[in-house]
Amino acid sequence: MKDEWLSLSDAAKVLGVHPGTVRLWSDKGILPTHKTQGGHRRYRRSEIVVWAESYKRSRTSSPAPEQMMQEVIKTVRMQISEGRLQAESWYQKLDEDARTQYRMSGRSLFHGLMTYMATNGEEAASEAYAIGYEYASRAHRYSLNYVDAAKAFLFFRNALIESVVKVYGEANVPSGQTADMFQKMHVFTDDILISLLQTFQALNKN
Image (cartoon, rainbow, N blue to C red):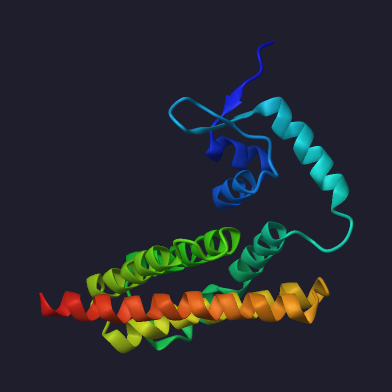
């Protein structure tokens, strides 16, 4: 049977990692990659499967970054319980539709951070701006003030940080790696918060 060609996103699904991770591995020459005449990346399914099996066997020490982030996301979902949200003053002001939107809004933050980590911060400014804009526009749409908008974002950011502390601690990640992770998290989320406040201000001028 003819070998199947995969796009970057399809290869990411096969490998179980974020597309940004596949892009990074491809750029570094770690992953077997082919390019079309138009310059697009393509991957042979057979090569990806063999590479993945070899890669998994080679990882006998600490978990890979993308594995760690997947564990963080699982922990975050447990952290963001309805009971914990109910205690938040900004959450109490929302109707059920708005509450559903906010419960889902954490995903953009988590996936944005994964992309940021996988690409070593490349294009971080545009990613942070987009997430900040999303949080600001949602708060504006549901008539929250800028203080509540910031509180809502900080709730999800803090849940993420607490989850990283828990997952990295349980995995016995070296302190140097943990410190580097926290530094990147704070830089990225601080940029999001600034974007949120700037966007909220602009929306209220219109």
